[in-house]
Image (cartoon, rainbow, N blue to C red; front, side, top):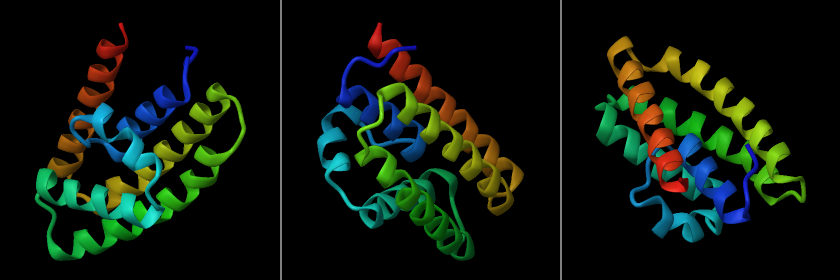
Length: 128
């Protein structure tokens, strides 16, 4: 898969790491220009709403989102090729999902996976 523009890499990263900021295209510039702290806060708020997180989970998810937003930031800002960035970000997302599975209960994690898969599918459909 070859990504054609920097905007596309931002959109796919947003879809995979942030899971949902609807509509993604309208927010891509603001997300790109946001700080890791801002992105972590947005992700956590979204997850709190969609996954019905309890107060303990909210703090744990925020800490996790912040950690990975900080790890993603240098990759997003680097001059690496689009494919290299995508591979690095995808690997980080896999790590994050693994940790997240320990924070969320089974039902919440299943819903998280379903929503994430749907967002990726929607992104792929928009690219066609």
